Length: 100
Image 1 (cartoon, one colour):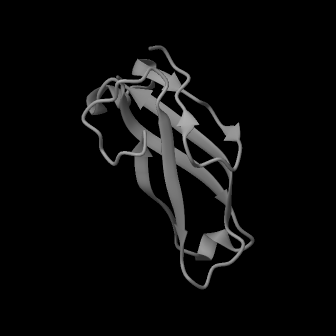
Image 2 (image 1 turned 180 degrees about the horizontal axis):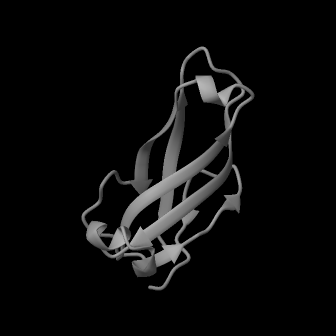
């Protein structure tokens, strides 16, 4: 299985620039930092966290990039899969669609 190195989410909120928003609890096949996955299309999941006083924060897009190792990730030519920007609010079990 390939190595998940980065998950970027583009979020929208009316006052997002002044607020603290982050992505946490990244998982693959419902496991946090798995050592190995035995499925060809694993599902990725994440949670959006915001300050308790921030309202109406939601995900508009996601962007997943996968490489064979952290070292290879820095060179975008070495990406195994790049989902590009996908307009979706899905954040649970987003399927890997790269090469097996």
